[in-house]
Length: 534
Image 1: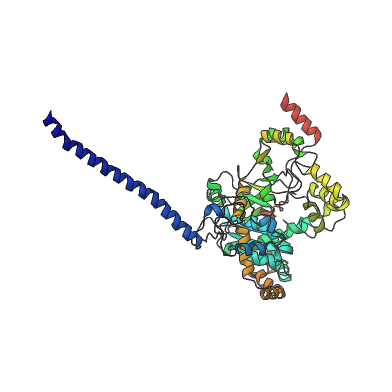
Image 2: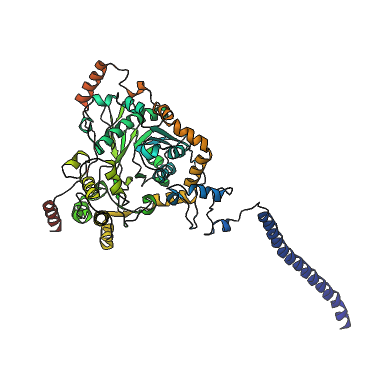
C-alpha cells in the first residue's frame, strides 16, 4: 500500500502542474480578447475625433443630409446655396435614410461601349424636369443628348448646368438657327406639308422635325448607332432586357431592323397635388399593342372614363432608328429613309412612359403657350388631339375651382375599386423602376452636385458676362451643323427637284402625327361586349 501510495504522488503532482498551466493560458487568452477590442475601439475613436474616419451609421442618420457618395466638404454650404433655386425642393435630398448607388454623378460611359445611343429633344423646361430625365436615361445606357433649348431651358442659369454634364450638347434657337433651318430640303418636300404654317402644336411638330434632321447629322459625327426622339415628359422603360438596360435591348435587335417602336404607356395619377411626376407616379395605363384585343375593347368604356379616347393624348408610341445613310425624320414619333421603306420592329415588352398632364398646373401651362381662341372651332387650328382641345378650353374659360373639379374627374384616378378592377384585367399596371432609379440619384446627391459644380465655375462676373454674350455664344452652338450637311443649301434647285420626284414616287409617306389609340363609339362597344358575353 505504501508503495502504491508513493508511486501515485508524482502522477498527482504532474496533473496539478498541467492544470495550472492551462489556467494561465486561458487567463492570458481572455485578457488578450478583452484588451484587443478595447484597443481597436480607442484607436477608432481617436481617428474619428481627429477627422480621419467617417462613421457610416451617423452619416445615415435622419438628422443629417449627408449620404454615402456625397462629399463631406462644404455640404451645408452646398445645400444652402442650391436652396435658392426653384427646383431645390424637388431635386434636393430627402431626410429619409436611403442606400444610393450612383456615386459618380457624371455617369460618363465613354465612347467604347456599343451600341452608342443618343436622345434628342426640343424643350423649354427647367432643371427640375430635365435633370432627372437626363440622368435616368444615362443610368439605362444613353450616352449622348442633343437638346434644342429655348425659353427657361436656354436661360444662363439652366443652360450652364446642362452644358456641364458630359455627353450633353445644347443647340439654342437663335435667328441664325432659324435661317439655317429655313433652307432645309424638308420645305421642298411633301411629307410634312400638312403641318406647315399652323400655330401651336403644329408649329412645334414642324420644329421638332427640323431639329431631328439636324440631330441625325450630329449623331453621325459622334458615331452614334441609335437615335431616339423623346420629350422631357417621357421615359424609356426597357422592360424585357437584362439588367434593365436600353443598351442591352438595342444590342439584341437583329441587324436588318432599321427602326424599333416603343409603344407608349400613359401615366394615371392618383392625386391632384403631384409635384415631381417621375418620383411620385407609379400607375400607368397600358398601350393597345400590349393588351389582348378582347380585354382592350371589353373594358374600353370604363378605362376611358368619359374622355374622348382611351388615352388622354397620343397612343402611337415613339421610335429608335439605326443611324444609316439617307435617314430622315417622319414627324416626332417615327423615322424614315429617303431611299427605302424602313424595316421596323415593334417591341413586345419595352415601352415609353408618357407622364401626361401629371400636374394640375399643366392645364394652365399649355393654355399660356398658345394664342388660340377657346372655341371648339378655333382650337382645331392649334391642337391635333381632342383632349388637348378640351383642356385648353377649360383652362381658358373656367375658374380655378372649376378647373380643379374637371381635372379630378378627367385626369385623376380616385376610384380605387375601378383601379383595382382594371389592374386585375391588366389594363393598369404598376411600374416602380424609374421611380427607384430617380430617387436613388436624388439621395446620392447627383442633382444637387451637378448644380453646385456648375455654379462653382461661374462667378458673379462670369454670370454677367455670359448674359451679355449670350447671343454670340448661342450663334456658335447653332452652327454645330454646317450648311452643307443640312442638304439643300449647296444643292441646286434642279437637284432638289430631282430628289423630290424620286422620293414622291417611291416613298411618299406623310409624317406620322400623334395619333389616338383605336376607339369605338357607344354602339360598337355594346355590340362588342354582347358578342363576347354570349
